[in-house]
Every structure is written in C-alpha cells, then in structure tokens.
Length: 141
Image (cartoon, rainbow, N blue to C red):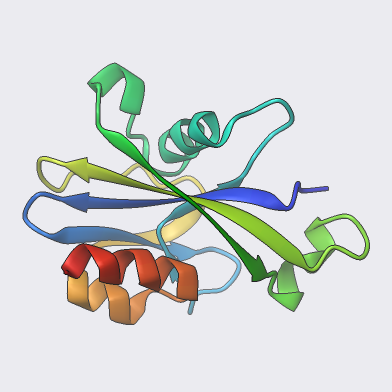
C-alpha cells in the first residue's frame, strides 16, 4: 500500500520551459514529477529519488538546485487511485519542490509514456492536477 504522503517536483528551465510527463495509466493526465514517500524517507530524499526514477536526472551528481517550497498541500486522491492506499484513505499530503535546469534535456522515461518541454503558460494549461497548475502558475509571475 502507498503512503498518503508525496512530493511534487516541478522541473523547468531558466528560459521558462517546464517538463510535463504523460501518465501510463491515464493518457489524458499530464503532470510534473510526483511520487509517494517511502518508509523512513524525508520529502527532500523522496524528491531526489523520484526525479532520478522518472527522468534520469541525478540531482546529487549534477549538483542541481532542488528548492523546497516549504509548503504542504492536502488534496483528495482520485477515486481511480484509491485502491493503492490503505482502506479508508481518501486524501494525500503533498510536499512541493521546484528544480531549475540550465536548459532542456533528454528524459529517460520509466513510469510515463511521453514527455514535453513547454512554455510555462502552456504547461499550466496542460497540467492535470490543481496543485501542479498552481506551482506552474506561480513560476509564470
């Protein structure tokens, strides 16, 4: 069962292009890097791990600036995904991060079917979750 605590990592470039990933289990759902915390893992550690697993970008080796927004948001888990959580769990606590890269790069997909580097305003429009859209929107300002 998944732990109802996760990270969101919005990856974008200095030129204002954001990375979005298309989910394998819902081809209409586009998102930034996300993932549940594992037992004994801090949100920061989960963010580093999820970025590596979902994109192939090694934050530690490349010494990249992962920024903890020091913000947690609670949201309702989509009914489609609730079976992955313990019985009765309907909400998730999300820790939010951003990662700025010098430029776009190739992504090594493992958990998604496609990726796009989009201007921030287009990424806001395509992102499927409200929390993801909010962080992207803040980056446009």
